[in-house]
Image (cartoon, rainbow, N blue to C red; front, side, top):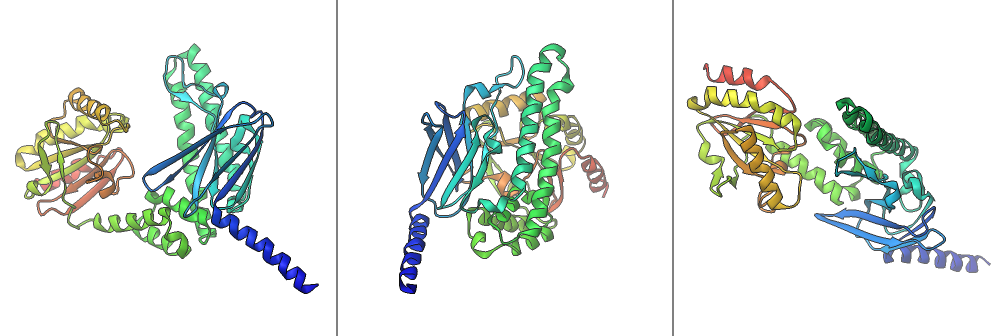
Amino acid sequence: MKKYFLIILFILSSGQLLLAQSGYVINLSLDHLAGHSVELSYTVGDQKVIDSARANQSGMITFKGKLTEPVVAFLRVKNPNLSFAAAPGYKRIITSPPVEIILNNARIDIKGDADSIVLADVTGGLNGEWGDLRLKFSRFAQEQLSASRYTATAYLSTKATEVLLHPGNVAIRNYGLSDSLKNDYIKAHPSNFLSVYFLKDIVSKFDDAGLNKAYSGLKNNYKRTQYGKFIEERIRINALNRLNKPATDFIKSDTLGRPVSLSKLKGKYVLLDFWGSWCGPCVKSFPNLIAQYNRYHHKGFEIIGIASEATYDLNKAKQSWKAGIRDNKLPWLQVLDNENTAQVDLAKLYAVSGYPTQILINREGKVIARYVGERTELNTILEKLFKE
């Protein structure tokens, strides 16, 4: 009898092993899904993988595939009745939020309502790691959707600026709460896969010591995933960008295609200004930057504007970049980070986590100050430097 039991146990475990080796299977069973499609998306390296399928009349869909490591994936219902314009006259379309899952080579079952897939029940694979966080994050997503719906209807009658800003204010609040929950999770569950994903997600919130400590506590095999490698690279870049370290040299092209080299400006104080034409705080900072440039340029102060435009279309990026320079009357050197990012990605090279970011380099080519967001310390330090 014991022999037969062991044989059955071996067969069952072999079946599980085969499933793990053969790939993932996602089974969706959602109310109100019949006739609609679901899109599965996740990122592997620099490639975004997208799969989609249409539900049968029972509201069921199955996705199959194979991964070399776990990833976080998103499933979104493609139902036009769940989408709406951000505000009357605006082209931006708000869609129903997706459900976020841990995808690995296992069977994963998703049950719920297609009208609110973000609230679906997800079981299988590593998805037990979410615990009650899934419900909390789902509520944030629902709050964001409600805020956007309010703006879409209320703006029609009020035209008030605060109505347009409402979704952004809700997002800022919920991002802060979400980041705090992720940080607490990393501390409580360092060996979970979700911890390496969360740490990658909030990596910019840590100082060097905190990031090193959090990374060292992660499970070794998860350190080898794409998320772990991202964090490891960020630690390396942070070390290169510490104050009083030499700034990493680069060459990028200006608006006329001429090379702009950081090393060619050695002997001057150089400010790297990371901006984008889409960035309100960046544009707001320009009048002060222009004043500082006009005040100190003849004394050996140079600025290199490094623009990152919010599009993958290089031609559109160039148009937005040049329009931003022209409209704001920016007189200093300018390069576009969207161009030739495979060779030189300056935002990554200088660990830029928010816009605007300003990095001040001394005459010896060393980083002496770094500012993120709307800051005024630059004026004080420039006044001190050029008095010496």
